[in-house]
Amino acid sequence: MAFYAQERVSTCDIAGAVARAALEDIRINSFACPGLPEIRVFEASKTKFEITLRLRAESDTLIEAFALGRQEALSAARGFLDDTLTPEALLAQVQGAMASLERQYKEAARDA
Image (cartoon, rainbow, N blue to C red; front, side):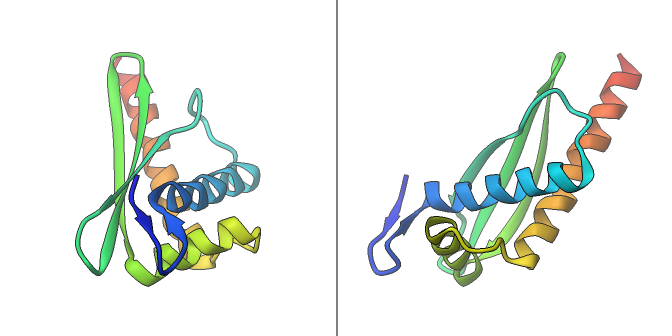
């Protein structure tokens, strides 16, 4: 876990914002997979974070990743801690990633 003292948030707080967005997506759109994806946050550069969603499916590990700009990620983390609304841009990215995981899961089940 990395802590950003100036912003008073950590990579765990960014993951929390992503998790909250994933739960909002499940509430809105449902989710055909047997559980929630694991969320990993990696500072890819000074200007962006790489977010990876991983889901175990039978014998496969399904992975979907997307990038968040530094300010967007830190702002979402701050909102998560302050319990404000999930930013629409983050929700849209998470919805796309969750839909991709769901497609991968259905394909893996079909191929099994």
